Image (tube, rainbow, N blue to C red):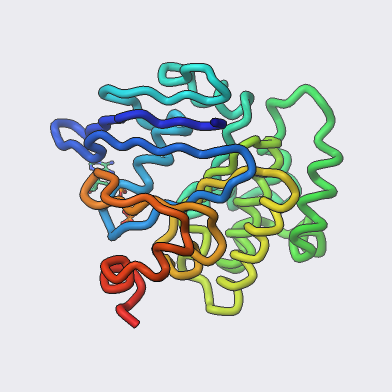
Length: 234
Ligand code: ATP
């Protein structure tokens, strides 16, 4: 098991956002978390990357307990995150943004930079453009590219398709598949449940801070209650 989350509880003040969530991610998988607004998907990713502290429970990465390890150390160990809302540096160029992903590494990021430009030719064409002037879809690509520059073993993606036109949504999902085919494990949070389930191997359904279902992704595509709640019922 590459990443194991066991019975985690997370609070914002007194309010419990995660109430005993357990999730496993095996090497090579795409695992997706689906659920309504406020279910706790973002909080789960933030807790894995170390941006939110645990109240209780345990997170194990490559067999080691990382529950109390600082976020920047988790990045170095191989947990890369592309946050919701993208969080790129608007005043820096595309290439400078990408190098922000690799600044803490001691080895040369040249190979990853070439890979990012191969995956996202648009970023290569616009490497000297200031990040803040890129379109929504391009900024999303940049955020994913920056996370890839950390050379992650597992890539945490928070709503990568948010706010994008349908054509770009399809493109982002096919890039996620390509990233996984090239060997990176992916934990994907999505509102766009149908496409997430189509690209993922396994899925967890979160409701009000708890996992209510977990199954191979293709099974959930045919699950009547999932269809009714998350796939528009068709
Ligand atoms: P969405 O799809 O809307 O982003 P989500 O499933 O990612 O939803 P979270 O953002 O993880 O859900 O939120 C889980 C719960 O924690 C919600 O009830 C939310 O209101 C609460 N919450 C999230 N962030 C904070 C915060 N900074 N302060 C207080 N409560 C928060």
